[in-house]
Image (tube, rainbow, N blue to C red):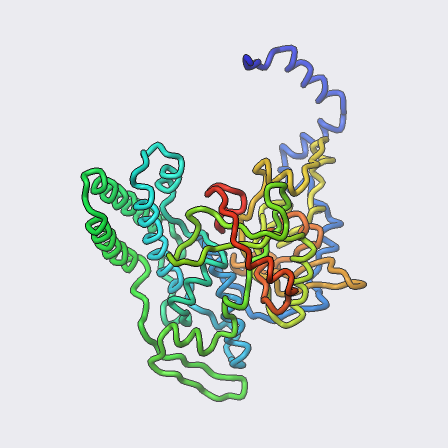
Length: 446
């Protein structure tokens, strides 16, 4: 069918439609002068989103991921650090774990996974859509809880003072450019060796040589991870504690009450191609190479809500993933579906459902934070307290507030302790996952 251009008749019809409603001109002038956000901001929503909650966990101050996409790592480490500081009754309210330490191993493991995926696909043409996808973004800052779980189970964690942040740990543009450039160069070397008939043994040896180079490069940006350190702190009774020459893995197993084996990832993707009660994974997804695929159990949103409430009531925050840019105000720290009067101001309708927005690529998982509180009224939640990782300048000293309606529309994942889930749900999680396309909406890593 021949494509039809815009004609003057169409333009004239559009103009007549716009001018037919006098309110359009009034709102247009206001939006052009002040911007859509300020003009459409709903003050009723602001008044209803106040920071008082019937169930709340005091988790200390928020952290700041700065110019990196490590929200998933910060959220997960926030959960682990709270479990340590709370159980040890530490006097230091601002105790943190080193994000830089976990970041180092994430970069190295993602480098290895990329090279392994290149070896797996080296018989294909460069124009193959999966090969092109791998080369477009060999690795990035992004990730998810399940990737974090594999990292800490392999490498442990350390206090912030044992491996502090670096310049590249707070602004990752250059480290990602350099690491990806070297990985693409490594991909060419491995593919050239395959084309020239080199043995798999020779190709694997070259891959290990590339990893030596990657380790060296990452050390220049982030420093070399400590093999041991002294863990020292004061408790609330005024007693000083010291655990000398402890390894990161020993520290994790000894002090962290949060163990990934106790948790599962529950998602809400209400699309026809992903029936509830089944598990899903993505091709090429991961960081640490092992035999256990990363997988998610897809369930109704009400299951996610009740599980999150149960975990908060039990005194433990909840790591969750959402589409943070939708119906949100960063300075106010508010997430609410009624926050903006877009339809009134723009004289239009936005009526796509969550399923339809997912199917038509209008929404996805873009950010990870933790729930630290919920307000229950007559047995039902109406707002949630959120610990973000964007520093203290926004929201209420870095904490955000979410309406329960926003939970329904834009929350996609919660990380839940198995003790808060039914035997039926845990049985469903044991199913082998359906492997989805690398570009499926379940897959964006943040």
